[in-house]
Length: 177
Image (cartoon, rainbow, N blue to C red; front, side, top):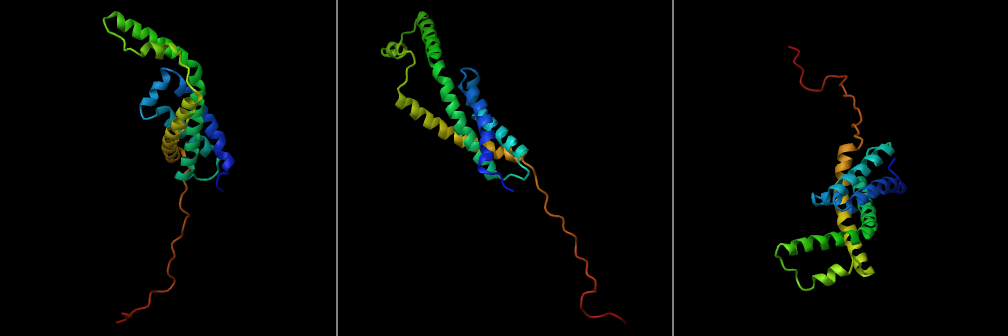
């Protein structure tokens, strides 16, 4: 019996929320630079959760579906977690650039305007970033889901067949001499 469509959502929500939270954190999220580590790992965990809850062997398509859903959930959680951290990141960038200018560097002309915006992003840019993140995280989630099914999915053995033994000798010339 194949998993229902509703069976995909629970593992995707759990693993996607964790992967999105880890991706949204400033320094921990930098691990996504290594082949989208949190997204691929989260999708593999979602495939493991799906395999544990399913009584049948999963296919690569099952892993791809749960992985894509995990990536989309992770993109939404990442965007929500990143909102309050934008001002903290801008303050950190401002302090780093001030220290760099003390060593004789000159700041570019329009940089003060960017730093004084305090990390405010228009809704249009936010939605565009969310859409792009969902697309990238979804594709990487598909990869992680397929990997997860291949690692953690239940394997099925081919049905046992008994060899058919002939009861009569095959027809042919008889060597009764």
